[in-house]
Every structure is written in C-alpha cells, then in structure tokens.
Length: 120
Image (cartoon, rainbow, N blue to C red; front, side, top):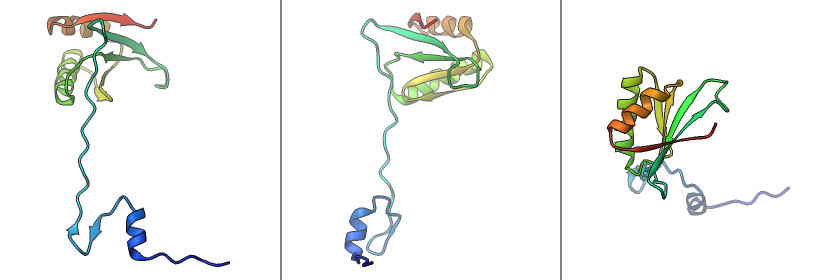
C-alpha cells in the first residue's frame, strides 16, 4: 500500500474553500448574486397552491415577477404583513404560508400585476 504525497501547492489548487492564507491573511469568499425573478411570455403572474412535500400544509407560490431579489423581498414582506402569516423568497419565487388566495390576489392586483391561477 503506497500513499502518494502531494505538495502544498497541489493541495491549494484542489481546495476551493480556502479560509486563511499565509500570503494574504483571511480570504473572503466571492459574494454571489441572489437569483432574480423571471417573467412569463404572456406577462401574467402564476399563483399556485401547493401542498406537495410540505406535510400537507398549503403554500401559495407566486412566480413570474421579473424583479431583482430585493424587490421580490419587499413584495413578499408586504404580502406577509397583509395576510398575517409567514413566507419567503426562494429562487425567484415568492412563497406565502397558508391558503390566502383572496388576499394575495387582491394585493397583487392593487400593485398592478395581472394574475393567473395555475394548477388545480
């Protein structure tokens, strides 16, 4: 059983999660941009009620808002406040907890978005 020895430079090339270097001190990782929302070709938002993978609990997902992540977070905060529930923004899609169909659609219509209900 022979073990191959690697040099320090070989090890540094393999490691992509370098935290500290004797050459430059603490290494800060590059910040990645949060994904923005993408619009559908017809210009409508898609609202969908989902329960799959959520232990039977309903969640309203809103897709199709072509805004940067910060704007999506602001819209989600407004909807959460109006509905009195939790939620988040994941991969450019807003998720609002609970079955708040009427409140969510009314608030998005006030903001000037066109809405389509998708799914069942």
